[in-house]
Amino acid sequence: MKKNNSNKIINKIKKIRSQNNENWMSLLKLAFKHAPKDAKKILNRISNQDKKITKLVKKLSK
Image 1 (tube, rainbow, N blue to C red):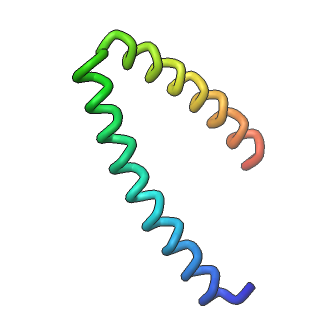
Image 2: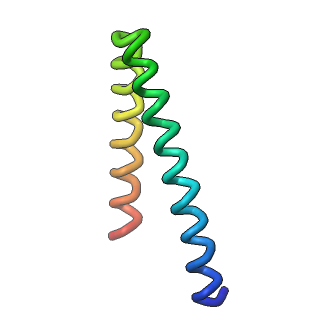
């Protein structure tokens, strides 16, 4: 794959991830507004899974 084409794809991914992050934050605000205790529990589970992913990525990047 050519570098220029790779950059176009990366830029598209960046734009989509940015939009998705906005959606994620809106959902997070809504959850904490209407069910803060449940939202905290779910967010904690997400955080724990993210930590597992981070550990695996570190293994790959060594």
